[in-house]
Amino acid sequence: MIRLVFLVEGETDFQILRFLVQRIVQEDVECIRRQRRFGGLGDVFASVVGCVWQAYQWRASGAVIDADADRSTPHASHVGKPPGDCRYCAIAELVPVVPEPRPKVCIGVPVEAIEAWLLEWGDLIGIKRPRDVERLPRRRGKELLWGSATPRREDVTVVCEKLFPLVAPEHIERLAESQESFRTFRASLQSLS
Image (cartoon, rainbow, N blue to C red):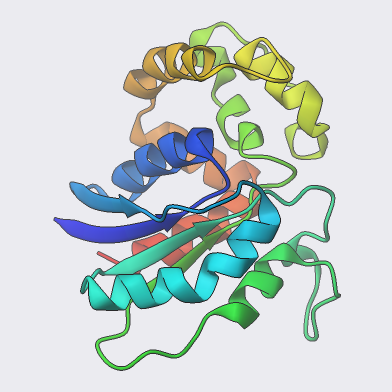
């Protein structure tokens, strides 16, 4: 069993990432969701240090930190010094150095929004995959996947309950092949097991 602390933008991201992590590491995951006072990206940035320290104190294998890209520069698109708007690099710069044994920090920054990752598998539940899912505007991705740009928790749960049981290892591989942001996230998780 792997112990992880999750720091995500909201309940939807937590539900999706917990599933993806279990499929990637192929082990049971004991998780703590880091509670934030506010939602959104600013709170994720403000909570990175506390999340990593909590993972250390809990003797977790790692911390999973997630933030949507929201039109920022994709991490894979730059080499060397990062531009000021790469969310992956902005989070990585905030990660504190803690004593040994250090938890591994896994950063996920889906292109635009986490819905882009799941839309890769939309065909499994009758949702036509958009042609360029990585460039799909956030609002449109939510509408296609959840049926609304502002989905209710129940809408998310229904789609996830239909989709998740159908996702096999080859679907994880297909997502990694098609989306660089997921490939980066998966590589960081694979080092946990």
